[in-house]
Image 1 (cartoon, one colour):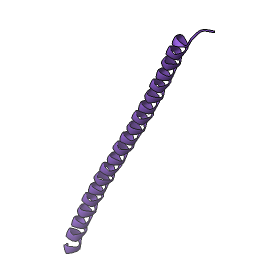
Image 2: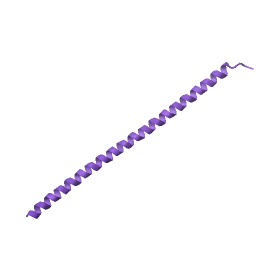
Image 3: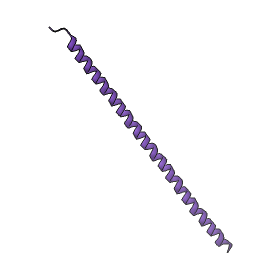
Length: 75
């Protein structure tokens, strides 16, 4: 009888341990996924910002060239 009781408790502890391990693994996986999403969003924001700055520089250069051409003495 004593062995049956130990077996039941052992099975119970193993089951609870496996459940807790699965919960921990799921939480770690979720944190890893969230971190990956944050990294992707950061990369996207950086790309958008870089492209916006490059476009602004090109517009300023075009306007500057247009003004220079417009005020240059005609031959």
